[in-house]
Length: 493
Image (cartoon, rainbow, N blue to C red; front, side):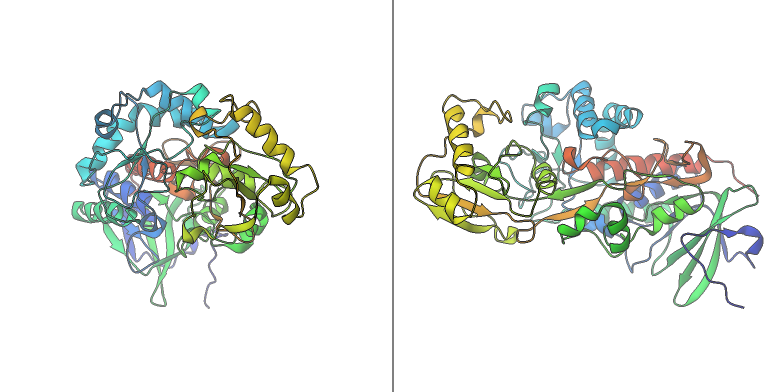
């Protein structure tokens, strides 16, 4: 009789017909978190197996720009070379704000204190940084330069709490997609150290013993089912759930308006569901990163965003992901970026930001957009009056980005949610300790189960505070913690 396995239902070990393989630590997923977990586990002496459903390593990490959010302890070489001194206290304060009201203080403190050492660890594995700084605002470098402003560091309210410092570090890679290089270095390092890897293998379910401790996985490869015993622990590094429409509909339905998930097919929530199947608690499942990459060109930051009521809702000098997050919270789908002749430059083609209306007066633009008379025009009038004085009392936009929009012709750029490029990925996941141990709703560790990367809810847990590089910072650093602590678990005979 065939047995049906499910990520939502663990298999009791008493029902395992035989063990096909045994390892100390078994890792599900070979992205950045899985690779870093494997490196640490092997170096701690654990016989380590990485299981990857795809035909090669990488996951969503390989699709990324490769940016890692790093700093503190006086600054990385790139920061210091650019003239910045980044204190651990400032990094801590920024990350606490970026995490929102439920920021994990212990996790943030650990990362802030060890971020510079983590940078050095990455370099020791073979990641190369050119240590050059690009001061212009951008999504990610297209050159092989390193350091960029990758968040809202210079924008209110973050700048009021932490001294601004650029912290986005991109590997030395020409063009977009530096995550390919990052993953090549980390995965090949894990393999060189002795981690075993099974590609084209899907984890179907966790296996638990009579005391509820995780002791293995059920896997399938090439149509064959196998049972793999984990003598010490299992680490779930299987991505988020951006590609699982049913889970998105249940937990973060606002993302269905975005229509552009960022991820690989493996981001189907299976790792989260497996963790929940053995008592793990999933937290902040409603939270997500949503981007509207309206810059570069950075001159557009001098424009103002309005909703379909003609009202501003954000300081436009903040990170593009913060703009997208708040745009998705506005009533209706119509979002416009207002610019004048002096500030207009054509947005990047991939953003799908076109011209919705243009005119010689803002009243004309208002009429063309079918907005109530006196709404948009009053918003611009108020903004211009304060901008001439170098102030923005409503949203505290920094003076360097303030300019009256008073040089015709005037343009409303079309940033409708159902028209422009809004992309997203999920931030919710399993609740874990900084060690990577998965927690129950009572915040008790699930025995011998760890998680990292987007399968866990880590440093980034609020879309309104996200910064580029936080996901890879979290995945690489806390993947390391999970690997090290899993390898320290008691070995069962």
